[in-house]
Image (cartoon, rainbow, N blue to C red; front, side):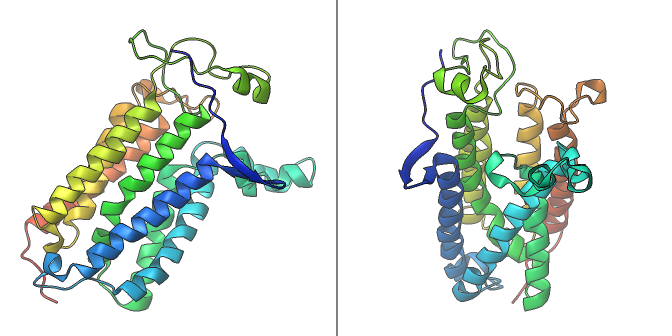
Length: 290
């Protein structure tokens, strides 16, 4: 199947382009805030404790998380995949090259970096406001797959982060006139590839969203701090590591790792270990009273 002629720009207001990718971030943040707001109001789900924050406090937390996503995502991308951006700060040939680390509009955000940024934001917020850290994580974790869903769909419409070459019937050739005009060639070539962005949207997004919904609303696991966070960390790590086998490694970005491993796999292993420990810890302890 030939990749459709998606226009990355939804519409323009004068010189300002409104892009689908930016809207994906907005949709994920707004949708996540709405979902977390519902959880913060559902006192029965947290009994015998109570929600870690009020809806007013949640509004403040969202700002901290947005900053964590942007700063962590960009700094993590540079650290894990393109460390030359840090070197360019001091050795760049001109001002534009030196500021490459901060040119978000050029692309380059890493989920694992964003996760670290969000984790730091949650820890800092919990310490400042003296709220239960694990319960605060349990409030945030169920909403993350919404952002992953929109983000992976945006990756597909942008024709980026494609999969490895394959002969499956649903393979996609990530090459069209727009991509050729933008780059002067098709970075993915004209070979059929796995639409790994859609695999990730379905598994990291929809499936994980459903699993966490069940954990919250049916299994009532918000009563055991850290349980839902652990399920998210372990679930995402397992899915991401598995899908790395069909996702094309980022060429020239620390992709030459031993034993056929990829950076995505390496970064997912600590997530799985921390997630498994949180699940064991929560399972082995009684519910916490407020």
